[in-house]
Length: 495
Image 1 (tube, one colour):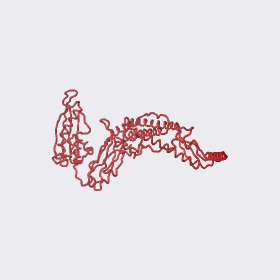
Image 2 (tube, helix red, strand yellow; image 1 turned 45 degrees about the vertical axis):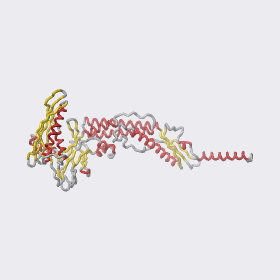
Image 3 (cartoon, rainbow, N blue to C red; image 1 turned 180 degrees about the vertical axis):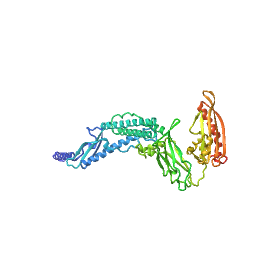
Image 4 (cartoon, one colour; image 1 turned 90 degrees about the horizontal axis):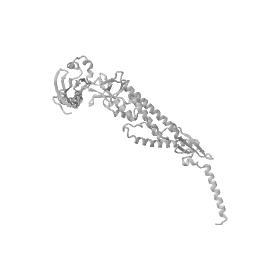
């Protein structure tokens, strides 16, 4: 190559290179658009979204979408970590129930930090940022409000149950407290995802405490049939009398009526359910016109708490599986009403056994409960004695019971059971004697079908244990004799 041409080529190359550089600076990209960071907005203090567009408006819109995507990724990751770490919470209750997979960007107060346009206006870019420190303050305040609300509501619920004895109100307020706790935990996940600094320490009742209080409350609610049990349905499937149920709060040996408690009556197949709310005396009723009466094996109407109604009153989504699971995972004393189809033959049995143990009258007969379960397995229809309460109130002794209840059942099993301490060998070795006299009568004819009269003793480490063992022996000996008498076939068959 001619040495004279070298300087000329170099000069030409420099000219082209400089021209290209000037063009890049004129229509190229700012450095922060490519690197997604800026020295004025360090990533430790800011969450950044950037984008390029045909104009400023287009760039701002795309930068907002980019920032939203960044925040959502951080939030989903934090949510996943939080759910994996909830080993102390019940598996069936999701403390983060209701947590969304995306976060509304406007709630984090983003702002545009940088805007750029090329000199020929053919390209634009924008940077949108979230100040982590500012978000920390916002979320700390939100978490505090939810936790204060949780503590305040839990206190209100405790007062409602202990002072006012209003379990219906207490249940709703406890659920609100649980929702406040869940909202606080959701805010904590968001704090971990987008804020800076240490999370505020937890205060107030935690999830396990609230669930324990709710479970204890639900376990103290008892639903009992009052009237309408054992009816025979008409041809169209209607019942002549309404079904009346009572809701009570069981506290030791006492029962208190529960008002304003949502209940639901569930016919076979749970179709055409009827909802009702208890009155000031704790009762509510439901009427049925189109029950299944043909070839239906399960002729019972169940009464349970209306979980959806209770959650709606608490301001919680009634379809939320986590909250509905609270009712499914706690034992609630339910009630059920039996009914007969028009052509169905069933022997109706009423059990009326008075029990007095260690000088105290008990509300429910243990022997009667065991006998009732045995008879129900044999297909007999048990009639609740409360349906004949008005007639029984006119009697003076249990011996007058057959005449009083003859229009309510086919067979009456009645009598009394008592237990007394017969001998105390030492402070840890006691003998108790349990005795009972039970009769079985066919009410239509007044015929005495049979009777059982026994007295059995048992030992235990204290009065209560000895009494329990003696009663178990009495039941084990008496029930096999009473079952065939009530059934009427002369012998007891295995269920």
